[in-house]
Length: 404
Image 1 (cartoon, one colour):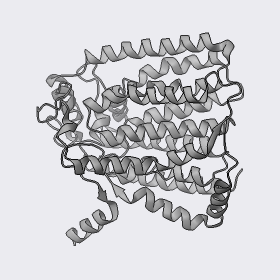
Image 2 (image 1 turned 135 degrees about the horizontal axis):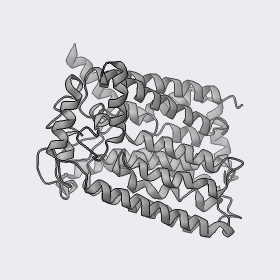
Image 3 (image 1 turned 90 degrees about the horizontal axis):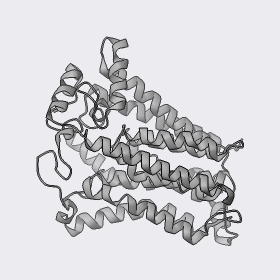
């Protein structure tokens, strides 16, 4: 075990504590978004995003129908399992300064905690699935025939949140590295099956996207545990909205064009600032592709295509920071996976070795600086007119000053 595992244990323990505190706060305050999103259920019949809400609803029977307790227990288990899987993925990796930099990106682990109104959202189920998928691919006894279970499980994730569909191609990317040429036909069959079954579920969800009766019945089923403004604001109320229509019944078509240049510059700065570790990684890494079924340049074409496929999600939904955060999470998990199986390594570069040596020597001080990097800027999870990039600590100071 690498000594740096003590950092990982401490890091994920702290994240777990903060996440559980946030979950408790969400439940206690019946938060409209962070709590309400998880309570969409099937009490008026099948509807999009309802599968986990139904589990929470049925589980609450054990606690005299107390949905707050049910929500907290189930989401706490999901959170703890998520951080445990992250530890499994990273525990045997000898962390260098670039990996530390990736870990402390504002769009990665701290995103759940720092950005207000994000919290533990439904993409955590996708992250759990993807880490399990990568761990399976990196296992010693892996065979492509064992991969079918993940191909058939992925479409089920769409019942949790249909937006997961737009990140489907991340399942294909690791296969390009590990599948041998003689297994290419099986891989293509799996990819085709993945796309067909996922598309079928998306069509099913489109025709069961919800209506006013769903909203009313779900809110009624939650009783005193319904989130604030349940019937007219938040994820439950959104079931009654058409695509490209917001909660105020206003058109959202090309909503991003109404943003002024300050909003655009602030958001672009936040995204580029958060992606610096990924750019730095690409500068120093090289891929060992002797048995790689596509060349390095072609892989990047596939990766860019993966991002392009997600663009419709940016057009129909405002949560742009969340979508970029999902891309960042899945990309970095893929990096950790490739490093685990020795398919990537860092170039024999003098600057890299000097920087890494200095980082290890001053590790605790530099980790503190990385924490400041991760938490310095605050941008809402959504992109819209007049949304501004803020300095997190100034915002906190302003709130404290206002309250006292």
